[in-house]
Amino acid sequence: MTNYKNILEKLPYTKPFLFVDQLLSISENGVEGTYRFKEDEYFYEGHFNNRPVTPGVILTECMAQIGLVCLGIFLFSEKDTEGKPQISLVSSQVDFLLPVYPGDTVKIISEKEYFRFGKLKCKMKMLNASDELICRGIISGMVVLEASSKK
Image (cartoon, rainbow, N blue to C red):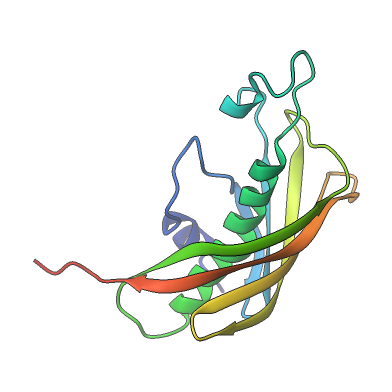
C-alpha cells in the first residue's frame, strides 16, 4: 500500500500555494486527488468584483501539483535514489470549460503518457463534485533529483 501522506510531505509547496488536500489513488500509470478551494483564498480578492472565480492559472497549478508533482514524487520513490525529486513545469495546454467558485471541491485525474529521460508528461482532467468536466489538458515537466546535503 502506498503511503500517500509521505508523498504529500515531500511536496515542495506550503500554504497559501499548496493545492492538494488528498490523494485518492496513485500508481505508476497515474494519480487521482482532490482539493477544496476555500472561500478565503488570497486570489479571490479582486477576481472578480462581487463574483469571485478561481483563476485559470490556479486551476492549472492545482492540476500540476496533483497530476504531475505527486506522480513524479511517487515514480522516483519507486526507485532506489538519494535526493529529493524537484519538478519544474515545462509546458501546459489546458482547455477550460466550467468555472470553479469559492468552496468548490475538485478532483484531478492524471494519466501518465510517458516518463523518460527525466521528462514526465501527463494527460489530465479536472471534475467538479457532480463529475462535470471543468478543464482538461496535457501538462509536462522535468523531474530532477535535488542533491542531498550531507554536512
